[in-house]
Length: 70
Image 1 (tube, rainbow, N blue to C red):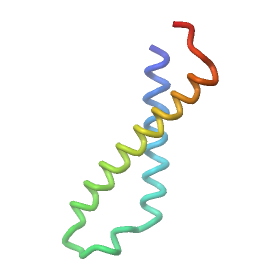
Image 2: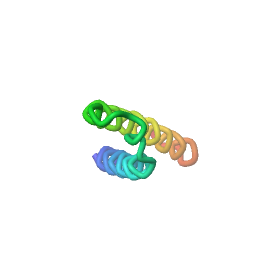
Image 3: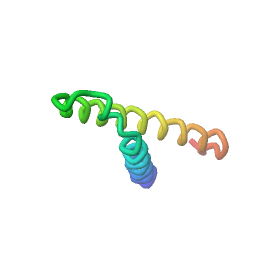
């Protein structure tokens, strides 16, 4: 139970960090103004995938460093 809560907290924090980084890049200036909805959808999907993969990597690394007793 604690593992799941920590996992969700780490995932949300990684998503927030990726959100800050992607917003600071200001990629939307490269596209016409009519494409804002598509850009936001791409931001959401990219943040979701990157934060998921980073969280999985962090937890696998921690599992290698500190093996669980299952």
